[in-house]
Structures are given as C-alpha cells and as structure tokens.
Length: 105
Image 1 (tube, rainbow, N blue to C red):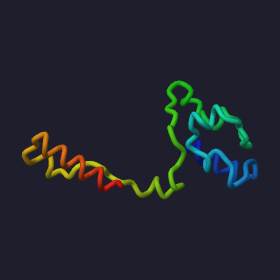
Image 2 (spheres, rainbow, N blue to C red; image 1 turned 60 degrees about the horizontal axis):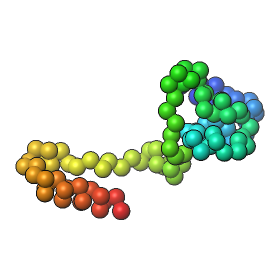
Image 3 (cartoon, rainbow, N blue to C red; image 1 turned 120 degrees about the vertical axis):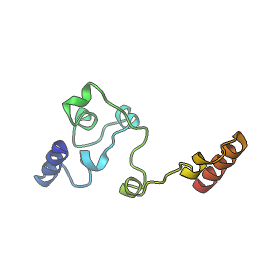
Image 4 (cartoon, rainbow, N blue to C red; image 1 turned 135 degrees about the vertical axis):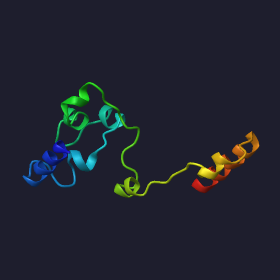
C-alpha cells in the first residue's frame, strides 16, 4: 500500500501522465515485458514496483479484464454447498459441472 501511495504521488507530481503510469497499466504481464516497452517508466519499475518482488514474482497471464469492473464484480463458479452435502455420485457431479459451465456462457 505504501508503494501504491508513492506511485499515486508520482502521478500527482506530474512525473507520469494520469493515463500511462505503473498503476493504470498494472498488472504487467509477460507479454508486456517481452514486447516493445513504450511506457514513461522503466520495465523494471513496472515488473518490480517493490524490491521484495525480486525474490518471488508471480507474472499475470492477462492484464485487467474490463478494467476495474472485472476486479470488482467477481463471478463464483463453485457448485452450491448443498451439492457437497447430498449424494455425490459421479453422474450427479458431472451434471452439476455441466450446469455451472452453462451459466458461464
């Protein structure tokens, strides 16, 4: 959170534009890193905004989906709890899986 505040301050101070900075472009994916870097901050700053990440970094497979809408409106694909309490035959679990997948389409 402290690092996020520093990045906000850098935008407020005019160091980075409001529409092209480490915060609005996060998370940085592997595709971002191997492609042409055309951002006003270094690739290292985008990938490792905090020094502690150099030891244990997880690279996202995709950037944000639907910007922050996808971050705030999560969809649970888990079966209902009642499915775990009732008879769980293979056929019933397969049907439950198919129903869950159909909801996602």
